[in-house]
Length: 218
Image: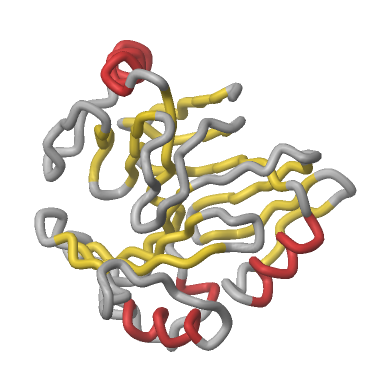
């Protein structure tokens, strides 16, 4: 699975524009009075204007698997990186053969840069915004994770990620190139104490050569 487009809400488009340009170094694909789209590697990342919604999402960007420390240094020079377990700021997901780090954007979204060692995506150039490969994960929140999992299987044929056992309140669907992270409402978003809530989300993804659209209304 590959996430080709991700559409989210933002209560402050101008500050979102500044953050994603200045901190992440993403190029703008489109901008009008009510939305902005960025080039995040293979993914088009769009924010639509909302008012007093205070949306908070959790999503991840893939970076080359030999550039995580370089990406860490660049992001740390521009914004604060979260602790995962003090004193560590880099999470080691050994079951996934991946490492990552986390930080907030201007909206309070929890962003993750993740390097997956199962992928052959090493890069030679110095890390910058153009080094970001894609949005590879998006968190989806529901009151019943098992039911949501069944719906996504029935509609899209999505199956649990082979490296992550299914848990009652946490299920990961997809594969190493793209994942939906299903969590129960009011669960802490790792590695924070922010409670997960569902907000409007639209995902265009490629599943086994077919383009599919998933829209979460709230």
